[in-house]
Amino acid sequence: MRKRALLSVYDKRGIVELGRGLIALGYELVSTGGTLAALDLAGVPATAVSNVTGFPEILDGRVKTLHPRIHGGLLARRGAPAHVDALREHDIAPIDVIAANLYPFAATIARPDVTLGDALEQIDIGGPAMIRAAAKNFPDVVVLTDPADYDAALDELRDGGPSPERRQALAARAFAHTAAYDAVVAEYLRDGCSWPQEITFAGTLARVVRYGENPQQRGAAYRRLRAGQPVAGVLDAEQLAGKELSFNNLLDADAAWSAVQGFTQPAVAIVKHTIPCGLAERETLANAFAEALRGDPVSAFGGIVALNRLVDGETARRMAEVFFEVVIASGFSEEAIERLGRKKALRLLAMPAGAESVTSPADWDVRPISGGLLVQTPDDGIDDPATWTVATERRPDARELADLVFAWRAVRHVKSNAIVLARDGALTGVGSGQPNRVESVRIAVAKAGERAAGSVLASDAFFPFPDGLEAALAAGVTAVVQPGGSVRDEAVIAAANRAGAAMLFTGTRHFRH
Image 1 (cartoon, rainbow, N blue to C red):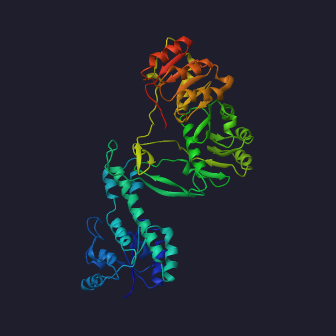
Image 2 (cartoon, one colour; image 1 turned 180 degrees about the horizontal axis):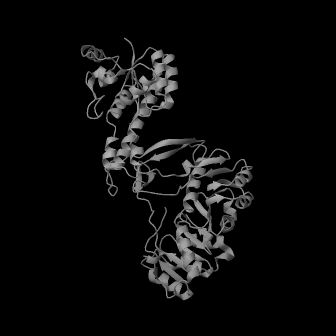
Image 3 (cartoon, one colour; image 1 turned 135 degrees about the vertical axis):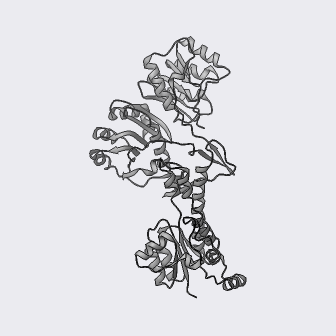
């Protein structure tokens, strides 16, 4: 009996070449709608599915392959006599190869003007059913969902394959393809404010990295498939120079790029282990870099730099004097590329035009734990200093208030217990990741050194006791911003009043565990 292949794809890349290759191997082609038209236009002979089923496509194409002559051909086990007898009895020919992929649901719902009706029409029914049927029966059916697999599959078929292991791998890819598709559909349809009983997060492979956080760990980066307009991130950056990005490079680049978002003036962040050790906003990018580097020049060594403007020659000249792993920016001048590109180990990443850190209700923060996942909504609210309250006898002056706003923006990017000191729109000291807030204050003060005097302080959560605040005040901190809400707030306020310091309560904490 002549072998048969069913071709029914939305993404028609390579489908004509696949069809020709299958015919050369003795396959009869069966196809649907647009795929059939593409094959016919290229002179590749194929039989319409309606001729196989004896039933026309109906309901605007919603029903065309949902038929026993299709699914029987896909699901029949060739080694099961009862299955073979059933095919013979009902005059159903087996299907040995299927190439199928799905309607562009994610692309459709990414359009800002999309309607629910538009979205529903792009929910594929027949495609996933065929793919899943073929994948279930992978010992007998080769299932192809990615055009990138077509050439290899043809080579394997010519050589009497694919092997059982390869067939199983293709089946796994097929189930992953439909699972990711369904995850995006479910995300689009569900109420964004409620927690679903069951949940799946979808992604597509962006790159494989040499290893994970450590050489003994494998690592890869996936681009999130989500219900909504695409969000540009570090995986979309164009690498202009330097060696391959590592797992840790990508983590740090994401943290650094997030840290410079939202600043109206030129801003520079220097990140080490996802924590800003330098952050500054200035009238020029070169000065912003100099001030960010001044925040902690020791920790900056080997760090990641993010800049919210195109990197000019002067800024590049200053950066070239320090060893960095990655520079990520809105763009690079030709002079900057020429100068920084001389450093073969330095990766230069140019973000797409208009890229910024954007989240939506679908962008949940997901963290793995043993045997499960913790999921929360993102901490992406916009802080309004107009809602802050003055807790102390003294109000901050204009300079202090500007620095408090800057410090509060910065502390959101620091791991708890997070303490940052700032002066004149630049970090002077950072303390983070400590088991108690006092220790974080001591580290921030030590990092600032003499620059602690006259700085302001931001704390990501309230001071449970006055001791942490007192350590900062003793170093010369003049104003503080913190959430408030401790049972000992009165004692903390009293300590600030004794020192003549100003303190603001935001009513919101930005704790990052």
